[in-house]
Length: 185
Image 1: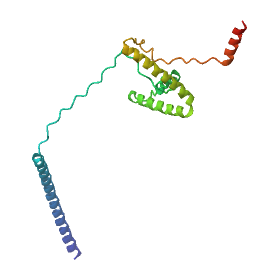
Image 2 (image 1 turned 120 degrees about the vertical axis):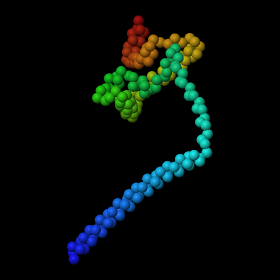
Image 3 (image 1 turned 180 degrees about the vertical axis):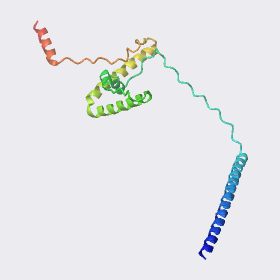
Image 4 (image 1 turned 90 degrees about the horizontal axis):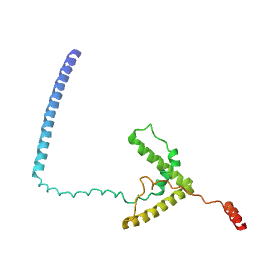
């Protein structure tokens, strides 16, 4: 009896498997048909939609005008003065291990971080570079006045952007000794 049931169940399961396979095949056919009909309906919708307006011609973006080489060099801010200081240049890491394309970004990030630390910890040094920036702004204003009048002659290449030598004031003891020696004679 068990053998009969077993064979009957086995035949029934094979029958069911065949039915399921048939259903799946039919579903694949139906899915393919649905996909095709959707594509057709979308193309019909596109055809039925009103025509698009003609594209408006885009105005040509004017090209940047080249800077007049006879014009005075631009103003440098305190960060730029600090960043181009030879003492600071010597402290910067070279980032030789990085690819060339990433070096500039790494140096910029490093400089930005160092500048922020410097602003927090050493405002006197920041003041020095701020004074250089103010002096450079004055220089630029003077040179632009001359440029507008046609009397400006640009300095030799690379000469105007050098770090100026900061002359320190002489100590008061030196001044007093020199003034006393001159008054005694």
